[in-house]
Length: 316
Image (cartoon, rainbow, N blue to C red):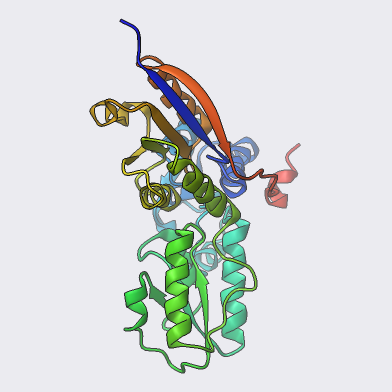
């Protein structure tokens, strides 16, 4: 029997961003420099395939610094850490390498600068996400207040409504964040925002490609992990942009084939922590069931590159 035809739209850009690429290289270069095991506090990036691959090479993933011995290097994940973490590592005389994405570090610096100017910070982010914990942990308790929705804005208790600034998690929905910012500016007209958008270029670009692709397809697959904030936002953006069926899949084995019955067009994208090999795996699975025609939906070109820390550039 002949496979049914399917037009496959591939979002571009998709997949790895510069911060994720740098973080993975940091672990790999640390293993080259110091040998296994190298400890990593939290998943280096939110993707099981990536974490499992690094674990097989000798990385040991832990949630707290207390789980790390003092005689082995430790790497802090791309999401960033509270100030207390490097302080503890230094007090224990540990070798540590910070793989925090430079765009997350920029938000940390921004929050500290505003605080130094006497402003209380409001962070737009997701409670419990390591990036939010890391950013809020740059300042003493009470100096950063968290809001997750426009409704939250009405209920926050600030010290002085005229001395406020806001920062955001880098992996949020651009549109949802705009709604929260509008609510903040309505309630606190004098609130200061970032000089440049906190939501990172990669998050913005991947969401824009999904918005354009959503109107062309019957369904959409987002390759990414369930704990990946930016991947989950892509699913939400796709649904809101008019693609009623948008599904998050970690691997080809997660595809719900019954839900795709009868479609003639399908969009594929990948979160910023999902490697292209997993996209290829999904495409191969589709080829086994459909007669595929591939089209690309390109909305931006990316050329951002971040250097690894100097200590790892000095490998012989």
